[in-house]
Image (tube, rainbow, N blue to C red; front, top):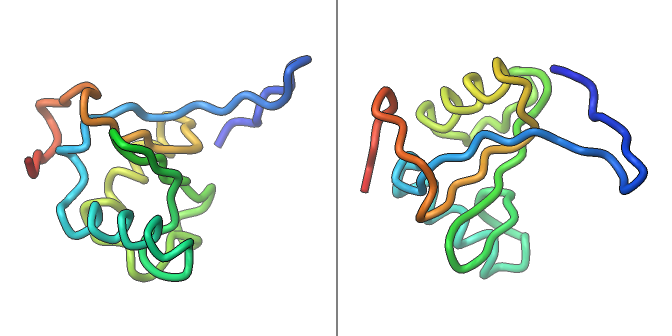
Length: 102
């Protein structure tokens, strides 16, 4: 993965921007569980009312064991594009080449 680029404002990271519909429902539920539990359970993420940001580990072997095959595949695609995060937004772009669960 490419280096994080330093700027006068701090590091800049790339992210893959997708509709929340590209995240399987079980993964969405895991994100909501993480947020509602204060980070003690579920999928580690940053969240808001319109979606989630999920960190993409630099190495495939560092992906958590409980990540679904569908999310793992999106992480591979993000990693190939030198992205550090996947941003799932309800108004985010729909990629016709990817599965859509909404």
